[in-house]
Amino acid sequence: MQDAQTRIAKNFHDHDAWKDYLSLAENTADLDTIRDAYEEALKVFPNTASLQIAYLTHFLTPPLFQRAEALFARFLRPSPSVELWKFYLTYVRRINTNTGDPAIRDIVRKAYEFALAHVGHDMESGQIWRDYIDFLKTALDSRTTWDAQQKMDALRSAYHRAVVIPLDNVEALWRELDQYENGLNKITAKKFLQDLSPGYMTAKTALRDLKRLLGPISTPTLSTAVSPSAFNLPPYPTWSNDDRVLAGHWKAYLKWEEGNPLVLEDQAALHNRIISAYRKAIARMRFFPDIAWLAYHTLATLGKTEEAVATLKQGILSNPASPVLSFAYAELMEGQKNIKEVNDTYNSLIETMHKNLEDLQTEIEEEVAAARAAVLHGDVNEQDPTTPAVIEAEDRARKTRERRSKDMEAARNELGVVWVMWMRFSRRSEGLRPARAVFARARKDKWCPWVVYEAAALMEYHCTKASDVATKIFEIGLKQFADNIDYVVRYLNFLISINDDNNARALFERTISTFPGEKGRPLWERWSRYEFNFSDLAASQKLEQRMAEALPSTATSE
Image (spheres, rainbow, N blue to C red):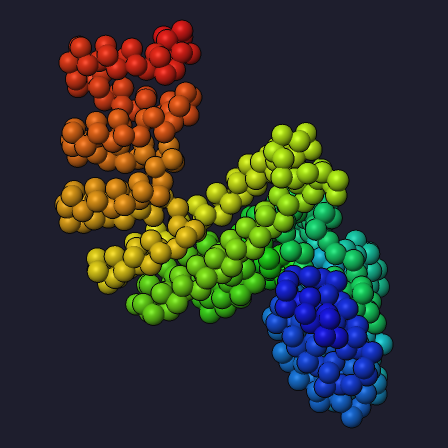
């Protein structure tokens, strides 16, 4: 088990490691070990029905029923899983077999109603409705007229509720209802069926849409005796095209539910369907931050504030490097004047992003080393740079580094956005001094990108009108980012915007030699635009000549 735990500690998204760990725990046959393993897994994969069902299976003997019921109490209410609710109903029927006893019948009936109240709107809950109707037919007493009337009312209520829901067996239930009502009274049957027909037709149409929408995102039906190797754990995205397509399918389904395709007039029923859809999405797609954010936003919009906040917090736990989720939580806490919580949120996010950057750097270096090793062999003199194999190895390493540099740049830019957002929050909530303290921390961060320096400089200029302080910050940044054309152009833009002609000209002359040829085009174009508009003819002609020499294609085309 220790090996599996080590693999999990290294990467808690490693599905195979989790499955091995749970299998080994199962093999011990020790309930405490099994409990601990499943509790650990459910912290990472909460509301995962296959885990919950397998966990519960260990407590389905009479001496352990109390523990099973404690787990059911934890798992059921927040669960959108029809399979888990079916498992619960099987348990209830198993321990309440004497349905001849009115008290026992009532327990079973309430259990079905409890389940249907939570998942009875789900397309896959048709079997629960089917079983409930069969239970009402066989278990309810009809020896007296009053009993018969009660049974008829209960069956009619179940049928009438079921046939206006897009269940996977709604057509079969409609045929049964038709037969049932006509068997009682053809006149009342006509009225009932006529009243229900529009809702049934809408449900049939919606069922076709649901099958189309849910087909690409459905997961295999669970067995009540599922083994760890068969656990269907939530996928962790690599942001491949398949991942994006999967997320798109979920968003299409969620949008469909929000559009009220069943034309429900009862707002509570509509909200229940929407909330359940988002619970399903979160259970299956918890490592997709955009799905978690959509769930949070929708729940908050529907007035489910407590669940919305809980969803957001769980989303951050599952996606600790997600800026969008942390920003949403920080904004929420800022609105509540909880300054410490906001600072803790930003601090935690940056720590996580730092770790990811370190891991990315290690990954890139390993890939570069592998690119070299693929060419270099034991008989190659690596000390001689003119050796063909060494030249090829260095070329491969360079291309690998260039290709992966885009990933590193994207990760650093994302980190920069977080530093900037933290500075803005600190200025809004506490003033310039704390915001400057955040910038001071950012400057010590080796991963800090140039956008943070620009943001700090502009903050000083717009909040204090101190152009000299802003210029000083730009100059500090220039020591690190003098070879970054975007940063230099932004700095030049700033100097031009404050009409600091001398420093703008000096910056251009200091830096233009760093960017030969086409690399310097943005800088040439920005400075020439200023010169052509505001300098004299001689200066403009001189700059035009220099620009033509530096950028021959410009002279040809213009």
